[in-house]
Image (cartoon, rainbow, N blue to C red):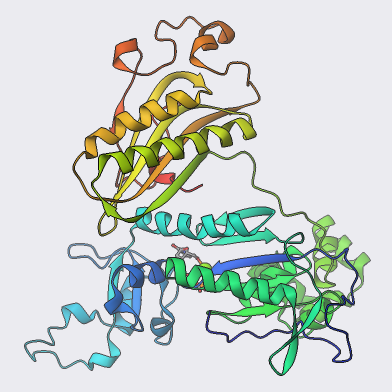
Length: 454
Ligand code: DCP
Ligand code: MG
């Protein structure tokens, strides 16, 4: 993080260092949103793109003529390129540099007014996202993952709203915590995030949007309403273009207007939703940061200190990851029908392999065994990162836990005993699934591992 933070949390200079003016009951919520995420991933993989206009999307490849922009680097946004724009519009505003034939001096375009185009590569973005999330997970007591590049963290127990001296001024401890988190993401993963810090989720979201890219904006408790006051109504979490127009018809243009509106009128016009938006505009939002539902899969990944083809190192890593995944499944009360591994080979090739089991199990020894078997395919290859994953989860039936008792406990006739190996005669399948990012996992167990993302 470049230190460009707009730390609005600084307060009354007479406050004593280390003394919170707001008491200890205010929560500390971070909203982390990666900057131009897919474009940042492309720059990480291809450093020559750094600082250049980069457009990521579909539809400019030879032989295709329709498609849309997924995202664009901030340099490309300066040319009027934005998400969801037709790729034809993007190409007309920012011609493709690599097609312009500058090398032969045949182009009459201005090189500085051209950019790079890259096709969406979800699998790669998922793997970068997982690296970021591993850091976020370590940093938070509770976390809600909203999308591939966005999460809320509750860090109330990890830091404080206390004000401390900093350089010539002062800042909150929470601001320092968030800055450190941003720096870790930049240094360890090589992409930047904008972070908002506030006493609730909707204010944290507004804060992270306020100073993109590479921003850090802190809204301290007691300052939320003043911060919101001048913002356009669309900045209020939950107000989209349609609602904004309707509110505009009522003379409500800013978050301050909404906070000062008649709540009865909002209730009449928009029902409960109207009251909720009114409360949000006033800085009131008591939603807790919670994970979204049950996870679809559980995984652990580990980068090796350096790429290696040493089988003992790889096997030991898989064993360790298998144990961690097994523990996590016990904590979550999850049974699984699929066990998989991820093997990243240099430079960044992500290979995933999965095996289906014929019944749901909770059996750490099996994760280890299947993980090691799947690893055998990569014997002799250099590996830079490994992951182990279980998927097709079922919750709340922990007695059906291991191979020995699955058959009996499930009450289902199953000659394969749910093991999923050829030796056991079960319906084992080992399936390479790379390159199928959007395919949903079939219900009967052969999960796609491309959502190797938790
Ligand atoms: N995305 C997409 N199509 C859209 C919007 C987004 O494919 N219409 C993808 C590409 C983005 C990613 O989702 O990189 C994250 O979406 P964001 O809205 O967070 O946008 P960015 O991260 O790209 O940019 P910003 O810096 O504004 O967060
Ligand atoms: Mg983003």
